[in-house]
Image (cartoon, rainbow, N blue to C red; front, side, top):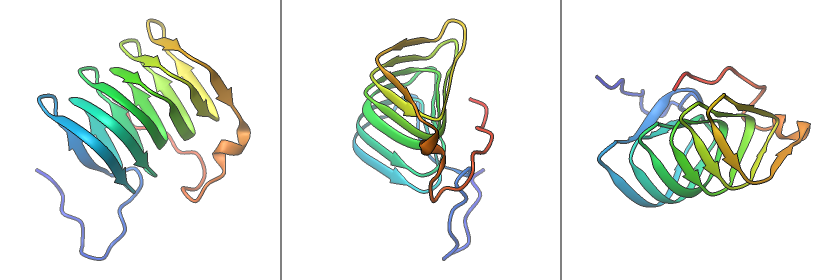
Length: 134
């Protein structure tokens, strides 16, 4: 079911390594170099150099940093993405965002300030890549 990484190998930034399930609650800081998906409740901070996916059942009260951030649930907090932030039709963001590319789908809700600067695209994570589907 889950692929095991070879010992000593670095995770690929687009590899989904951590999942906080629908019936789970987490308080604290999540830090990862690989992908993260949240479907449950979370409070704290997300520091991720990979992609972050907020599922449609998620309720996140946290500041979120990642390469690409896809929001289908609720985030109360600020989001910073190196490449892209996408708010899907079921997504809600209550906080400020900073990214190179912002996509808000019809039905998606965003309440806050946006800072779209091209210098977010330069990082150790490399050039912009296509975000995974939620």
